[in-house]
Image (tube, rainbow, N blue to C red; front, side, top):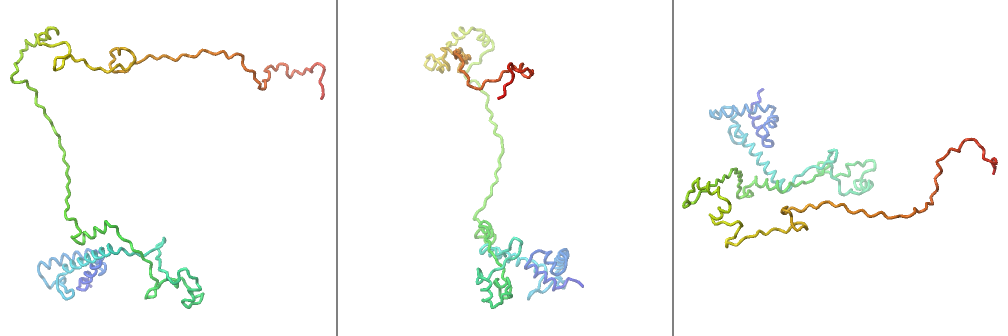
Length: 306
């Protein structure tokens, strides 16, 4: 029996409306995921030929069309439903069932019996004491089953903003610009060679040799120089040196280095005569001479018995 029927193709589209995964939707009609892709390839081939006798040209509701178009329509319905669910959860939070440490469901208790004794519960429900069960203290639904305890968890504000940006263009930033600037380079500064002035006369090598052979006094007399430094007014300039860093009148050409004084050991005080030692009142020590002990000689006059 073939599984390629109009009923299975419509059932696959219905499964995609609740779960857009091909593998999960294919399991609902009892085929493999690879079979779905094979059907999709055959449907596209028949659609290009416009062969309406193909088994993939089906009726869904009141409309006729190709199976692949209905598949895409079902997937879009799923994404619209999923988007609406996200927006609803972003607004009102996510409702989850409360469980204990052992992952057992915690059920709601009847507010009438909270803090009440068993006798009160039996009197209210008209039960005998041996008929009372723990389920009688729980809140029951219309079907007579206990109602699970639930809690509402709200998503963080930053995720809520992302949901709104994905749902509507009104929440997206008006402008978004991302710049990644990474500039690397080397700056090379080349200094032009120093050139003499154009009106300067070129000095001959022989003339330079004659000037080098002159004595300092003759060189100063020729060029009008002086043996000491002068300022712009021709006055002699005396360098302002810092005072010496020690108490010596001259720093002995040490410049600004601190003077090194020789080490002079401190004088030792003269010994003081302490006089005679003070007498000691401690118990005197026993003599170290034991030569007369243990020789067995009785003392003169014998022993005296007390």
